Length: 284
Ligand code: SAM
Image (cartoon, rainbow, N blue to C red; front, side):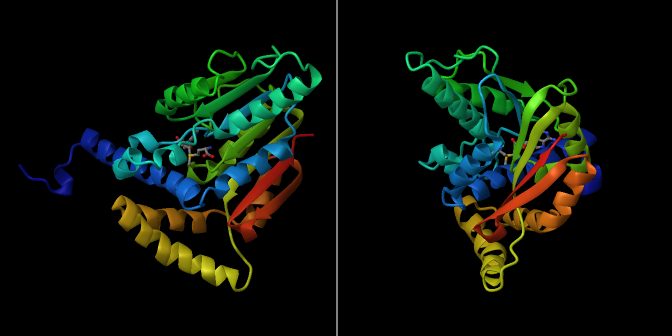
């Protein structure tokens, strides 16, 4: 039997590609969670504070899961104490719901249960079905398991199953960089939002501050791949990760794409000098 590339059957090939994708995708988590030294928590808090969640809200968080459990390269980390740090399933949705619950609690001091407001619906949508179960488990651990407010939906950001004009808010955190067609994702976000609905995107972006840029480049191109090799035994995936950040449109270009999708009042905020950016737009 030859193991030459030409001999690899179609199904094996797609399995190989799948493994590579899973491995790469899981490294996004490492970048977001471990290498941001926990800063991603503050960035997500900021994203949700810009959303201004309210009781009765219909909200869609896209790419709300992580591929950590499919990882081939990160089993060591999964086994270690770091596992808690790496789980980002439902991160944004939990914050949105927490914010709504705290408003509701303020309004009705005796009632403290999740789902207080029957109308609130927070949908977490991810293309990877494995994240749904993990997300549900995390929700249950947080006492959010039985509520009707939090719903887990398998789906592709490029072709959402939600109705036109059905959402008050749309978030995508560390998700849009991985998709095949950014324009399709933006068009779908626009379609599912109601008039007045807000689009918010948190993504690794571009640093353009003299001095800091040189430091960040060194960190990205030298430290991250070396850490990847050391921690996960996977230098290549980390290099790919860094390159994917470079390939992603810069803040101004991405803002232009959001405008082209139909959004108005498009703006962005750089965090840590542009290491990440939060883009925002309104469907008016
Ligand atoms: N939003 C979480 C966070 O902020 O930590 C996790 C983001 S994780 C790095 C990227 C997620 O995007 C993965 O769970 C992956 O399955 C999902 N994803 C990739 N392509 C997608 C698509 N076309 N539609 C929906 N989800 C997608």
